[in-house]
Image 1 (cartoon, helix red, strand yellow):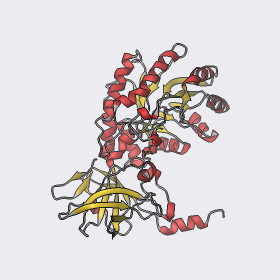
Image 2: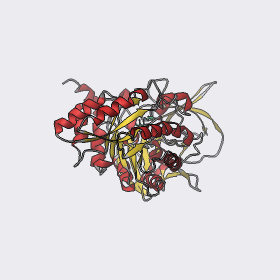
Image 3: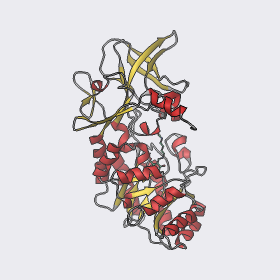
Image 4: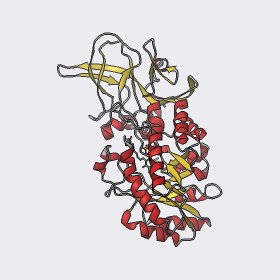
Length: 424
Ligand code: LLP
């Protein structure tokens, strides 16, 4: 939680009083980000490599706003992208092509062409996720008359039950669509080595997201490193990539900091005799989650004998994580209010029962006009939709203790025009 309660009882983020951002009819729902804290997060993680060759490839899917990506570029990060659009965005935000890795189980020819054709030598690595994909990437490289650096994304076969996270965000188990299964690695390596237009640069894995202990992260890293030792018998590798997944504290604790994950991984890497390889990682959430909030206005209260509902103007279309993963984001007032509190069920305006942010202890006082949903900087705006004809939320960027950029909500009429124009 990167918000701070001032001595006068008001909540601030990055030195800006959040209440000051709620004026005006269309001010909320709004995402607010502390850009300086995001840059510092990137720097702190890079510091944990202590000069070892590395790449912190920020997973752009977590938050693709220009000021956020640019801040992480300034910190020295590269990018992990999962679509052609994210690749274009990373390049435009100043990420050098060789600091980009491109993951994804099903890339289109147009997307592969973009990756193969970027920069003087293509991007850092196209992450190949199946033996079947090898020839597709090779064909695009041949068509462009270029060579393409690739890495193999390994599915380490880690049982979802062994990880302390939600099953929907685990990716490294046997039934997941992600990565090359262990039994196909040999064949995939041979297929890559047999194609002169491909250069095998590394091995990668990503076992899941919101891992709160370094032990869970190392379960996948151990498998990856053992495999890297074997693959090095026949191919020279430049890097091992242990993926993203560093957890944050949503209120239930996460003792490990991103740098702790890296320190533990580097120790294991050295222990396995792989210390000469560069270490890549792909953190998304841990770079941005704690440094963003959603501001919402209280629209309505409803009290029955059984329940108290607090209805706000932010819905599941603005912040999808609770509806999708039963995620819990703390909801807090923007100004401390004295007087009694109750357990309020906070819900949005969308016509779905799952448009529900859970039960929170909040003041009963009708003066409670606005709230903040905390730790919403990752997978918030980037997953927002226009369901129910709702406008995408506003975004406000804070740096140096002041607002340095904002995008307003689009008018209602824009959605109406867009839908009426469909098929025309
Ligand atoms: N690399 C790969 C290949 C990934 O699939 C992901 C996330 C990451 C890196 C970044 O992981 P992170 O450091 O952010 O945990 N929407 C979900 C999370 C989905 C994560 C998907 N893959 C959520 O809101 O919790």
